[in-house]
Image 1 (cartoon, rainbow, N blue to C red):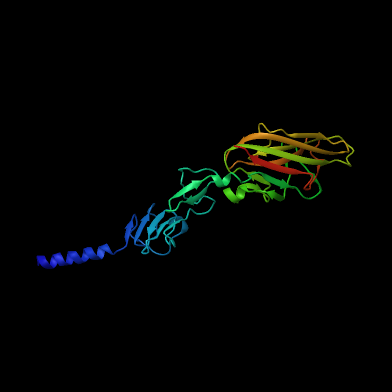
Image 2: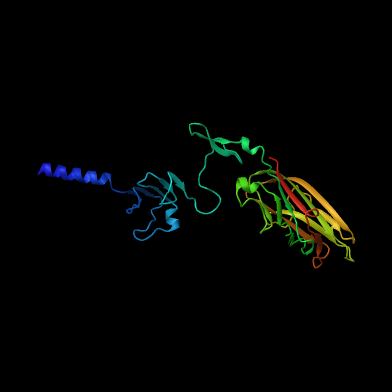
Length: 271
């Protein structure tokens, strides 16, 4: 009887060695399956939200984080957005390239970023247009539609740099930025004298960024070309827009001429 029991236990042990193992789940879907929040369904397909906190190892030896079907030795699915979910802080730097030596050991190579020009230059289009705004509700100067230079997107991702659709610049890293804005005021027909202003405003505010000059001209039936330049501190994921207002009478327009040689915006990270 004892001999039979030992044989039976031995068989069960061998079966267990080849069974799928689940942690925090009674329903492992791979050889090794961890359900971080313990929220997986007992039947039916798992939802993306449930899979997001799972870690698995497949029969092929593939490790999946945030996925239950890894197709390579390591697959990390961090959901939507630009963040990959992978962080390698040692030796990291903005724009550095992950490379390897002869034996396959990886490291961050910062030398490749030294030749990259991170200045963004955006041209305007549309020739002469009317814009409306007041000192309490500034209008958006939405004529910057042609990106001449923008290597920021190539390094930091598509959500950073100048966004043509939203007409704003999204800051890729915390630091100091030099902003230069040239605006061509096309006042050739107005019979009144109004104070026209253009500001660079941060994060939806109705005021200029601290440390950044603003434009202020008076309509005098002449064309006027004005440039402002400033260095400001910005944080990662801040954004700024170009806004306009007629301080004298908001019911009358500010007339601005768009074009590659007329109204231009450039942004340069300097630290």
